[in-house]
Length: 337
Image 1: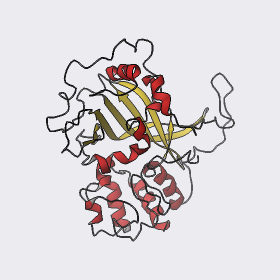
Image 2: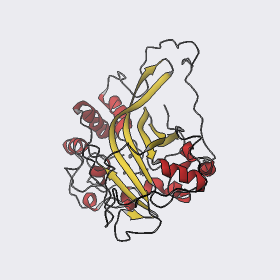
Image 3: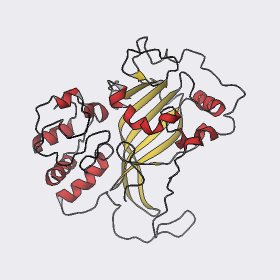
Image 4: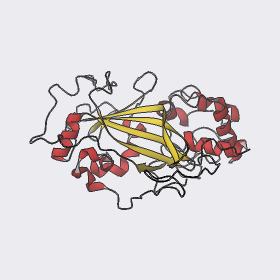
C-alpha cells in the first residue's frame, strides 16, 4: 500500500471517523459541566492526570488510520465527553473545559475476504487535551494556544510530556485555524465541524477481487497482506516492513524529511542529535551516543533509558519489545545508509 496524500507531521493520515452521537445530541442552549471541569484531573498548578474512570463518561467520536508503505501503521481513536459533543454541535467550537482523549494503537493486519484488513492491537500511547479559554496556567509548559496538552504512558497512565510546544503542537499546526483540532474527522461534532474538510480528500477503493458485503467471496491469492507476515527471505526487506509498522509515524528514511522525529536516513554510525534541520530535545542534542547497532537496538527496546529525557522516551515509552522485530529494524537502518 503506498502512502496516501500528504504527511501530517510524519505519516500519511486517512480519516475513518464514525458517528456515534445522533438525534438527541441537540439542545437549545450550550450545556456547561456542573462541576469545575478542571477539578477532576487538573491540579491547581496545571498538572494533568488521566481520567480515572475512563472510558466511563466519554463517547467515541472517530478514528484515524496512519499509513506507511507496508499498510496501516497506527490507529488513533478519539473520545470526548457527551456534553462537549452537544456543545460543539450547538456552537461550532469547543467550550472552556472540553476534553479530548486519543488512544494510539499499533495496527496489525492480514488477508481477509474483503481485502487487506488492519485492526488495533496494543496501545502505544495516550494523549489528552483540555480546552482552556482563560489561560489559567501561563507558566506551565503543558498549557498554551488555548489548550492543556498531555501524553500518558500506556502502562502506568503517568503523564510523560514536558512541553506542549515540542511534544504535541507540531502535529496540530495544519489544524491551527480550527482551534488546533482536526474536527472535520469527527461527524459526531455536526455540520459545523465540516467547514475545514481538506479540498484534496481521497476516497479509497476496495482491492480488486475483494469480497463486497452481500457479494461473492474473493478468491485466495496466496499472498499475505502488504507489510504483514510476508516471507521476504531477507532481514533487510523484513526490516523495511517492520520499520513502516513501528517507526514511520514519526520518522522517514528520506534525507531532510523530518516529522515528529528526525529523518533516519544515514543514522547508522552518526552521533545522536545531529541530523540537519531537526530541533532535538536538549537531552538528545547534548548526548555523546553514537548510533552503533548495539545502541540502536538498546534505544529501540527501551527508549527512555539510553538517553534519559529524550523525546522518543515520552512519545514511544514501551519501545519494540520483540527481539526479532528490533533486529529487523536495526538491520534495515544499518543497510540503508
